[in-house]
Amino acid sequence: MNAFPNEVIDIVGIGASTLDRFIVVDHFPTGREVQQAISSTTDGGGPVATALATAGKYGSCTIMIDRIGDDMVGRYILEDFHKYNVNTEGIQVDADAKSGTATILVKQKTGERAVFFERATATEPEFLEAHKQLIESAYILHINGRHRKLMRSAMAVAKEVGTIISLDGGAQRYDEDMKPITEASHIVIVARDYAEKYTGTTNLEDACRIIHERGAFIAGVTDGANGSYFVWPDGTSYRCEPFSQATVVDTTGAGDSFHGAFLANLVHTINHMKGQDTTSTTKHDRASIHAVELLKACAHSDLEKAAIFASAVASLNTQGIGGRSPLPTLKSVQELIG
Image 1: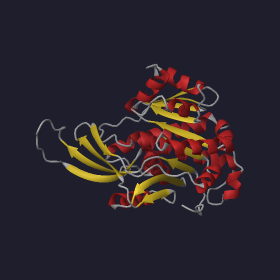
Image 2: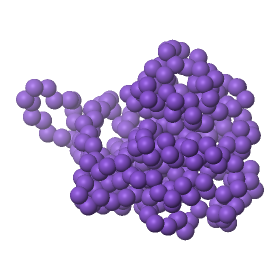
Image 3: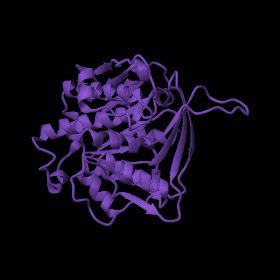
Image 4: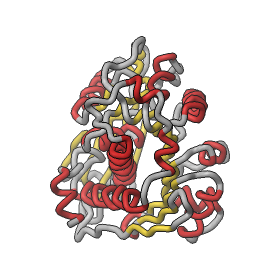
């Protein structure tokens, strides 16, 4: 990536891009058992990557920063991004590396899953001048802790220019090194497991409050079918009720799609606040925008709409196999919300 993309970018993402292979089974095998798979499919994967795909599907201009291998899996990853309008000019391709994959067993009756992953052998991407320009002009930098050296460089730029830093704190991803990263982020939406480890409490409303007190303008904790909890920039608490489904086919990507949908709705709100249409906004205009100040000025009703939209998208995304393929149409989401 030697030049700035021609299109205006709303959300820059830094994370791992993978190919996910899903195998639907009656039950998880034990011992030397042999069983016939009920079905199988492939989908693009990776937490930040799927969030960007979701945001792209619902109208945001997004770009992914990563490094993948120059192999069949890598080519699939790029093609899948393009389906969801994700710009891939920020993805570096290593001719000698192997791209990352995940194999996911899904129980047909419950949607319960077991994940086996193989990391990419590509080294961490280099932080380029073009990346700096992207972050300076974008509204949001979305991260989850991968590529930490590059991520920290990107966060420093975002802090300097007022770009919103959004953190996806997924389950089983918290470690002590993530503490300062969490505290430096403006939007911190995390899974129950992450919240409990980071805050030391199992009360999710209290956890939300602690996350907010430690620096997040928007603090959120998601709890699957139990809904989500938020604290807005002015300290107001909000409980987002879940959209319950009679059956759950697969929960893969539900949290990632929640993040992407929330950010897409937030981008729409910010554009409205600026009185600008994304099709007419120029890169020069974006360079002078302090998105963080706009975030702090968002009305409660707009933030609640973003949470409700995200909850509906995540709920409907559990109705099919994969993290991206089951993403619902905007019409389906609106019908569910009512």
